[in-house]
Length: 243
Image 1 (tube, rainbow, N blue to C red):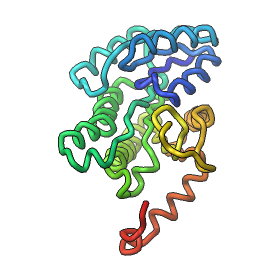
Image 2: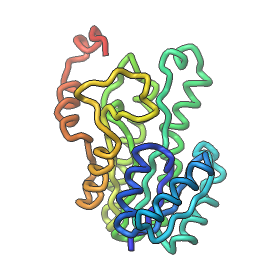
Image 3: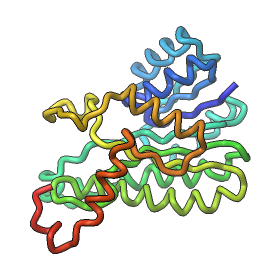
């Protein structure tokens, strides 16, 4: 039986991942801010085949609560085979440009809190386990339209790259998940096009990457090629683009 900890379990992608593991008979520990939503998700997961589904309400920015949450997860599950860090917010770039306080708050949610959680989780994992986090293609290169969000995700990606090197020798896989555009409640205001993916499709890609013990997963996979091109654009040219 797989024992799964999901932080940010109320997000559309995380819920879709949880459903896949529920169908496999996994035992899950769900963490998020909204206890009622988590309880509803947990009830659904039990119906779908989960061996167990426990919930824990916590704001990821409450760093002082991380240790107690992890203690509860390990106690309930008897250990963790997969820890997925999936929380985040889509920063309002224009608002952040006028507020250092908001910029730092967004960076904390999308960058510092995942890093703090990964730091606390890492020493608890045994060989064979996986630590995964949802970063973003936005972290591959800063763009004027979302550089607050992108810089936080870049920090997560760089941190997980180093963590992957450190933990790999002990048999713990560290996975950086880099989705592109995903059609979720967080992006409902955006016009959708052919590059947009559904949460279920991204979730299947995440589970496939975990099963294969991959280090980095661009989802859908075509985003790898797109970001190779974007990263290769010379800086003087990139500066003039409206991205």
